[in-house]
Length: 171
Image (cartoon, rainbow, N blue to C red; front, side):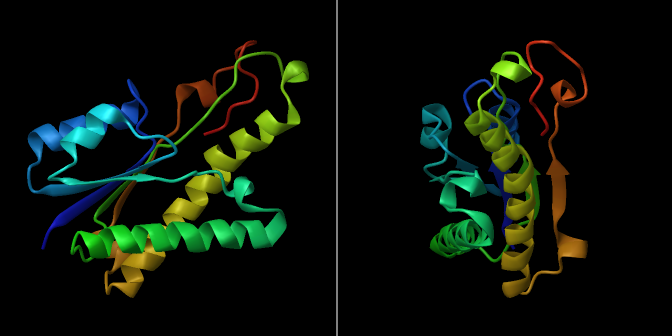
């Protein structure tokens, strides 16, 4: 059975990119699926034989208002994951590194409502829905999440360190 790792958030010079590169370099038996809002050109080339780069906006708030927008995000993310797994003939996900996150510099009083909503959407709701969707897809594919899925929810020290230039941050 092929081992499959999913990483969210793999921008250039990020922790996600570093982990993806380590998997590609040291674990040749692992197929990698990276989900991010933008393609990372370096990783995309490396993934040609070893997985897929799925371009997907990980902010559920960008899919509509209220519960219907969250549902739309959930359905689209599930569809993208299923298509990717089936396209690679994979039978589930073994490792989830939920790393996507955004932040803004500046004082809270100058941070726009849109920026705060984006931060909350990606750093909180996006993480929750990625985990929920991965678990649902695994169950559909006959996987036991308690025995088969290893998860890492990536936070950042910046989320607990008070800094005057980064008041809105909560991965």
